[in-house]
Length: 349
Image 1: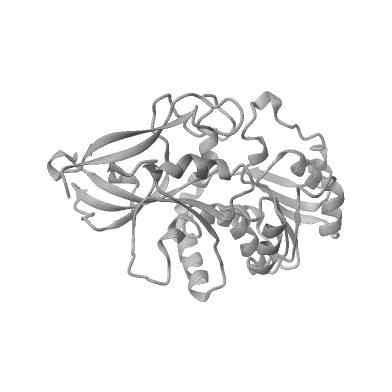
Image 2: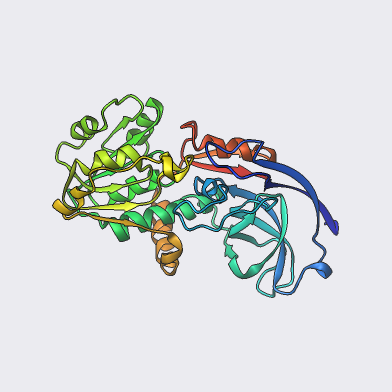
């Protein structure tokens, strides 16, 4: 390995007040990264990034103002960071050596980096039953988010009706499958007819509908959830959340995972929910959550999901974009209904 390598990286050029980030907001540049062992600080490692996760929350970090997710905001000229998987190519930490595969929630959107090892987690690539992409999906942040929201907050019981919005997305596909494993009837909504079929035929949803074809969400939920909703795993917020509150059962639970329908608008233009009084009348529990507050449960989560994967009882879908130049396209796909499952940027092998 050369002592320095060229690395392309994406950085924030201007804040994104509204809409989907474009080349006006995010730009790419080439830098040289010194990866020689002598130049690596103590406790740090040099990493070639192989896979990068592309997620909706990244949009909230680009607005220049707090948007409700309590995430650190990107500054102008700062490199975008995301959950990723990489291979160590140089180390000043006795616990890591060249060739080790590691994941981190804070890899830059870049091809190479030198990073503190404090947030790294080593993975065992000898287990050929588990593809590397799964460490960014089922065994990564989406799987953990679904596990926390559905099992720790939703607490599904056999026979209950569970509704998941954005059900074919990175988190939704696992939330529904976990509810099915607990004996629930599971209904999902998504943005295309093809993904409706995917939900029912691959992910085991009992029913699903295309929200773009439904002009009345209240009527749609009454049709697809005739016995009411006991758990709503909310990924979209807005009008869908309002419709759900008209269809919840007594003591329903609503884990608030995200509100993707509202991310691209300034907060003053976001859709309000007019029927929150239903929370009182139906004694509904609605709880937002961030996975960082549950990170102490990661080992329990990983062991459970690995077991499901080896049994073949949980399935994933990935949409892979190739090369660092595709990052902006991959990010835009999340907000257009064109993505299926987990969006991943593949940078190397």
